[in-house]
Image 1 (cartoon, helix red, strand yellow):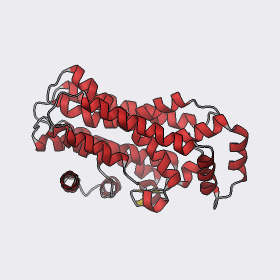
Image 2 (tube, rainbow, N blue to C red; image 1 turned 60 degrees about the horizontal axis):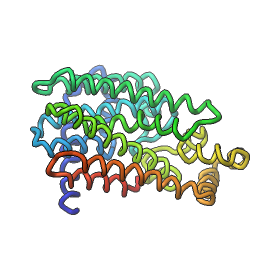
Image 3 (cartoon, rainbow, N blue to C red; image 1 turned 60 degrees about the vertical axis):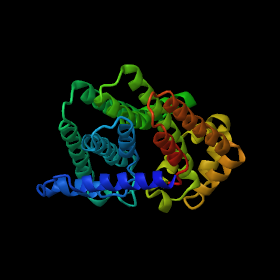
Image 4 (cartoon, rainbow, N blue to C red; image 1 turned 90 degrees about the horizontal axis):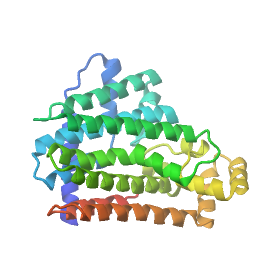
Length: 319
């Protein structure tokens, strides 16, 4: 495992170096200063790391893989910048969000610029065909659909768990499926193989998001590196909130209305723990992580260990 950890650290450093080397102009500073600020945040780079791990299984040129990896990371950053505006979050990756440090207009424009840079980099792939660009663009639209559902759910009293799982598959799973599938699409693999990679990423994404919902209740803002209060006060429809509201509507509404700013998170945590919702949610995340492992095992590649260890890495994360 130590060799694998060394590999992950190496890939992460190379991604960060490549992000710093991006030829981002100085002017107009109104556009480019927020973009540079966004890219220096201390993200985990899990999605571009997955691009490299999948590409290593096919001996794809690392320089070409880096182009795909950077495009994926920039797409991820684009979504975060706009999500932070919509969710009124003040912290991201341990630093102020762009709309907090500058203003909303600056953040919208910076997000648009980041996405455009992602497209420019993707189009520098040697021998790129429509399949790569098409998948990338469809992924972007699917992520937007997921965010739209997430926002829509905020104003709906009853959300089913099935609807929630559909939403996170789009909002989170789609990007991880792209990280897994784009290298094999670029490599010219069969559609059935691409489908397995897509399924692997979606299972992993669902596990990741359910786990993220858990961590936002069981962890703290300093550890997570982002603001958590906005989600709690708006009662964003996480899997745990849905379970609590659907099963214990009166108790849940009373808990929310009677909790102050200082004790709401602890009260919610205690409620989820006492009702078994935390244990049940952990089991749900475990199911999706195990499903992602099964999808990897179906891939006809010699070196599956790195991808399996990557799932372990995500499942064991604490932030």
